[in-house]
Amino acid sequence: SGEGVSVSNSLTISLPKRFNVRIDTFGGDIDLTGVEGEIELKTRGGDIQIAETAGRTHVSTSGGDLSFTKVSGEIDGNTSGGDITLRQIFGRGHFNTSGGDIFLDESTNDMNLNTSGGDIQVHHARATVSANTSGGDIEVIECEGHCSVNTSGGNIRLEKIKGELSAGTSGGDISGFDFDEKISVNTSGGDIRLENVRASATCKTSGGDVEVELTLTDFSKKHAVDIRTSGGKITLTIPAKLPATVTAVIHTNRRNYKLERYDIFSDFPLTKTKPEEGEDVLIYSKGEINGGGDPIHLETTNGDIYLKKAE
Image 1 (cartoon, rainbow, N blue to C red):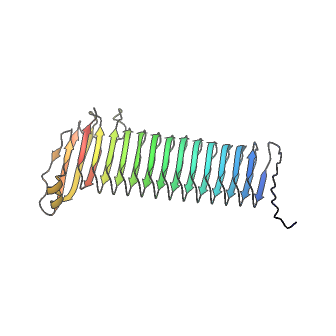
Image 2 (image 1 turned 90 degrees about the horizontal axis):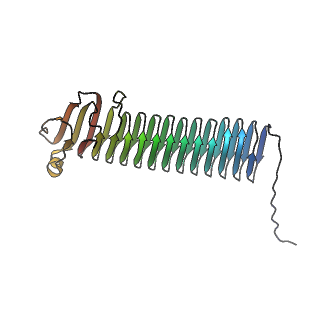
Image 3 (image 1 turned 90 degrees about the vertical axis):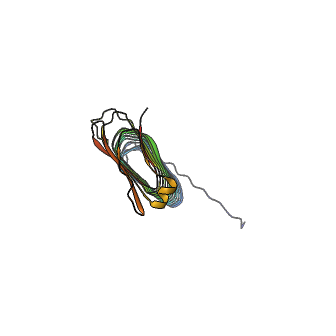
């Protein structure tokens, strides 16, 4: 009749529970449930959903989303144009997307998450997590293993981190609370605010304020603190009886010192040196508190420093 014809095909296949699967399609979605075995799925134009599977899994799509639920075994998932959603992942996983967000809720093995154009959210991870994005925010809530997160263009939010942490951003703020092990955070363009830190902490920013609260009660645990900013205020709150050796330094120049009167304010007794003469001004305080202990180093340029005693 000369009229256009639209054809849509759907194929459903029933498989034994233990079965190796290999599917390659040019134009559709793939949905696989309840299979144990080697799994290889590839589509050039659709979404892929996998649930309740076990075995080595390799999945890729050039134009859709990936979804994994209750999956065990080694997992490799890649998409060039979609989001990745992960729920109850029990195997070691490596996931990549060039154009979407990644959401992980509950994992029991090591996770490697990478996106070039989206946000990353990680909840309830009980093993190592590495998360990297070139264009979004990162949120981690409840991580028990070593956690390493990095973004080139967003903020980082962290809550209830039980393992060691490394976090970095080139264009945002870093904030969070409840840290049980050593943490290191770094931003080139934002503020840092961390509460309930119960271990050593290193915090560096090139363009913002830093506020950190130490709340550990076991003073035999390592609690060295190193906070540095090139353009803001530092506020550190520590337990009243924390043993530490403190060094606080402010860099400025004669003009800024006369206009702003930057200074070091401490609830603990520190020895303050007289600002040096000349164009460059150095304001310096040091001292041992509660008999001395792990080092606390606070250093800023053109900003005040506050060392506070917890109430």
